[in-house]
View (cartoon, rainbow, N blue to C red):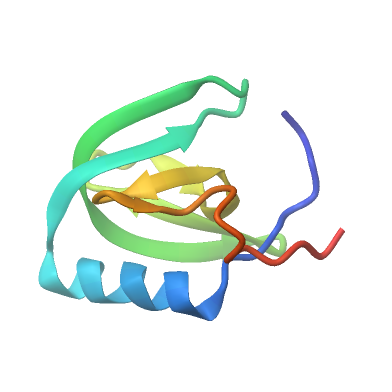
Length: 87
């Protein structure tokens, strides 16, 4: 599942920032690098960029590409029209 990075909208980044600050925990659903769906109950530690790709860091230390998030705390992230494609 190696495709170009599709940045999240500023609105979704704002949600992540708020939740990380609040140390909120909940269900986070994302696509693995292999393309399978995974779900964890976790909080958000932080996020960062590496080589032009943004990643979310979960409490467990797992790094998830932001464009592979399906939903965070019940809010849909993937395929909802809020992501902007730059490829």
